[in-house]
Length: 194
Image (cartoon, rainbow, N blue to C red; front, side, top):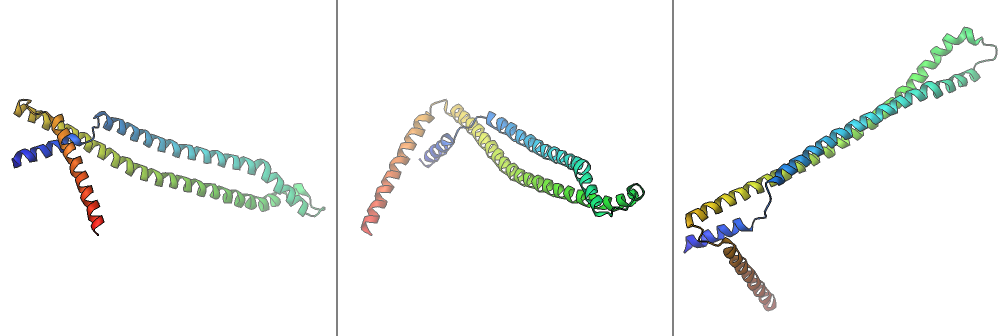
């Protein structure tokens, strides 16, 4: 009797597991691979965006900032200075100012880019861990389903298909539901007694 009860409980546990098709594992792996590709695309887009910003910054420095600072320096020079003669000295004075400004702005862009890429990488690591766990769970569920299928096939082969597992599962479910309702009633009585 003990062996039959144990066998019935074991069979019910197998039958009560959620059914996950084996193709789910393949589909999940494809989704994970797509997520990896999306991360690489995001990094590439951020890098491209900041490269374009650096180019625009250089264009701005060359076409707008440099002429404006030259005009500023011209207003600071006395009227009697010969610009053509003093041009090399003026350029020597202006170039370090322009380069400091360019370097400062380039550093700001680089810091912003590094922060964004760092955040993307941090988020991707969390995503990768979660999807890896999900993939492992799905793979385990698929293996369990395959093991269940093989076990049921072996049991059917041994018993000559004389056991109706759906009927056994239904009766066990009914028994468990009745037992649960009975326990609930007992708990209610216990609460009333206290």
